[in-house]
Image (cartoon, rainbow, N blue to C red; front, side, top):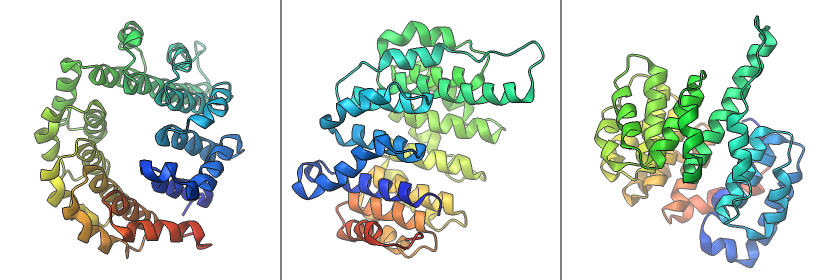
Length: 310
């Protein structure tokens, strides 16, 4: 089941995401738990805490989030910058640009360790580019244009997604075309990018790939259709709730919650009996978003239980 404390944090976030609950006194203890997580030695807990505080709009945590901008981890600093921006504080955006600009240093004949570090560096640089797009930071456009030519394809692709979020039709069209690629990783990345860009004109092209044979493609397509709130895809996504792959079942559950169509309630209630704990939690979170009490009750039980496969 993985890091159970991280799972508890994820469940708390699901419970706190309803605006009325964030204001309710009975949830202050959970908010305190999340704030304390910023100082946790477990990086996964720290990351979840930072994301959570930005998501629920907790302005009381501004001080802790600013402190996180000095963390030794690039990924933590990115999360902190995004959370701060969601709270109306753009002081972390220069840090995002700095991370995107900082390329790995490789010798003429790089060692295996240098190559591993370069891959890790590319991952965080791509994350920084995605974040600048997510925050609609138009002042970063010159930098994003420059990085479109980056040697690391992940960084270049992330900059293209950022442009899509900033309204570039060229970026959108490139990703729609790439959905037909013979390479499964290209199809998956393109589907994910279209969900990030958020242009509803991409929906028909995405629907065609819901039955893709590759798991990663199916997951990316379902989540993107969820982000685009495509109600017409609900029947097809519901079918994925019974897929043999637990990751597909989990993400299909999440997608249905994102869409917000109550037609999915009865199917999600059945998924609460799934053999996999993460699938059950995903279904409960979506039921809760859809206003079904079964979801909230299940999430509260997860917080109270000592069973690591809730």
